[in-house]
Structures are given as C-alpha cells and as structure tokens.
Length: 394
Image 1 (cartoon, rainbow, N blue to C red):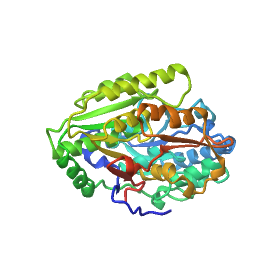
Image 2 (cartoon, rainbow, N blue to C red; image 1 turned 45 degrees about the horizontal axis):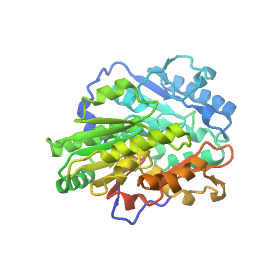
Image 3 (cartoon, helix red, strand yellow; image 1 turned 60 degrees about the vertical axis):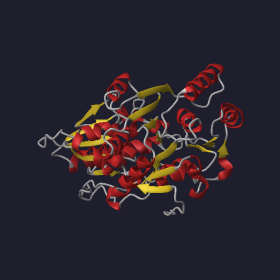
C-alpha cells in the first residue's frame, strides 16, 4: 500500500491516548481479564456464517487454554442479534451494556491482560492504548469473501505482525507498547491554536472517537488552559442520555443534533432542512477552530460549509481516508459501485440548495454490505489541515 502522501495539508499521527493516562486510576492488579470482543457476523452478508462460528469456537478454545489464569469475558457486539448463543462460551462471562468497547477497555485498562477479536477495530484501539491486543483474522481463511474481504484486508493493514495470531498451537507473546507523547502533533496543533485564538469545537458522530477527542482536549488544555473546548454531537441510536449528560461535565458547551442521513422521506428531508437552518444561524466566535471526526456526516458538513472563515481540521484514521477517498486504488471492481436515489438527490439537488459541500455515497453491488461515503472534493481542499491516524502505534 502506498504510504506517503505528497500534500502539506495531510499530516500523519497516532491515536492521542497518551494524554489520557492520568485519567486512569483503576489499578486492581490482582484481577486479570482476557476479553474477547464479539462480532455481528449475521450482518457480514457475503461470508460463511457456519464456518465463522466453527473457527471462532477454535479461537475461544485457544483463549481458554492460553489464558487459564485469567477471568474470561465475552463482550457482545452492539449490533449482535443473538450470535453469541451459537458459540461455545464455556468459562466465559457474557457481558452486554451501553458502554462502547473503547470506553470499556480504557476504564479497565489495569485489569485487562489480553484483548482478542476476529477483526474488530476495537482490537486496534486496544493495541494503541498500550494493551496486549490481538486479532484472529489470519485463521479465518475461506470465511471472508468478495468486497468485505477486500475491505477488512485493507482495514487491518499496517499493523505489526505480532498483532495477528496465526497459529493456535503457538504460545501467546505480549505485544503491548508504552504510550508516548506525539510531539509533532502537539506542536502542529499548538501552531493552529496560536494563530486562531477562539474556542475549539469538536464534531463527532461515532462515540468510539470520544476517547481520542478527550485526549486531544487534555492536550489542548495543557497548552492553553483557558481555551474553551466545546463538543458538537450528531446523535444516533448508540448515544445514550447518560453518555451525553456525562459529556456536559467534560466540555464547556455540548450541542446535540439528531443525525441526518440520506432519505427521500418528506419528514426526513424537512428535519434535515430545519437542522441545516439552525446551524446556519449559529454564530461561532471569531477565531473558532472546528475539529471534525466525521467528514461525511450531514451535521459536520453544515458546520464546515457555513463557517468557511473558520479554521477547519479533519481527523480520521488513515485507512478510513484511503478506503473512502482512494477507493479505486484498492482492488475494488469499479463497475460494481451503485448509487441510490436518495444519495443522488442529496448530491445534485438538496446539498447545493442548502449551500453544503456535495457528498458521494456509493454502495458496492451484489450481496455486499460494504459502502463508501466521502466529500466530492478532496478532504484537504475543504479542510485547512487533515490529520490521518496511523493504524499502528509504532
């Protein structure tokens, strides 16, 4: 995979979990956990579900054997529809709650000895948090097919070899790393905030990015203690009222908008129109800095489009940028890309009517559950600075 990008607005960095370290006080070292993060494999439409179950059970056997001194925990995926009932979870405690995987891993960092999954993004997060974290993906030959396999192959690219468990008969070697301060990111962000003296506005739709936002917020407060730091949430079903209430204690302001997505239903279009008008009427302070973690989201698009005079920063995983903005370079059959009517209407009529940046939504044809969404323009044309987060902490 091509690793270098010749553009001054594109900057490579790492997950900013370093600045969260002082928040973590859960240090009961006597209780060690081995955590397996479940999968919603029924939604993997192209894949062999029966083979997935058999191979997952082999991995669970491996964990039972290799982690016999640990408390074994199976965390149900938020989108599971009873998949865990088909697995052999003997000796495992099965847990399901409102806490997202990243928050769970961080809150219990001192108790967790190992984190496992088949191919979860949360395992990547665990590795970047300084945990022993692994995935079994290389043991699942024949399970993943078509576009989904291409997607996951790329999603797991750039990670160290010791992140992958290739041999279920081999001993388990630790791969945890010590978190280090990303001085280049701190200096780069510091220059932006020195030149733009207004409040910082983080924008988020996926709550799994909240830890990264909190890390950046702590970094900013370490440089500019008096700088107001606000949060804009594009809310969907995974956001609980408790989550939002807790966030109000961590940020100076929290603005919550209902997430809008492509739909031709009159009620949805009216709701999106009203939301766009509300955002357009908001007056952000001079020198404000918008830091978006959801470049394709309608709410973020409104704030970015209606605040062209403000400094705009995009933050996203490098592999997400490659998948959505460099899709044709990654081995997908371009003849299978499909557009739905709602995305066509938004791109050519609704977004221009509202004065928004145009977006492109493409679904990969056939039985695939894979889709791609991006701004029509290159990300670095819309944002003043783009930070691409590397998969690997090394």
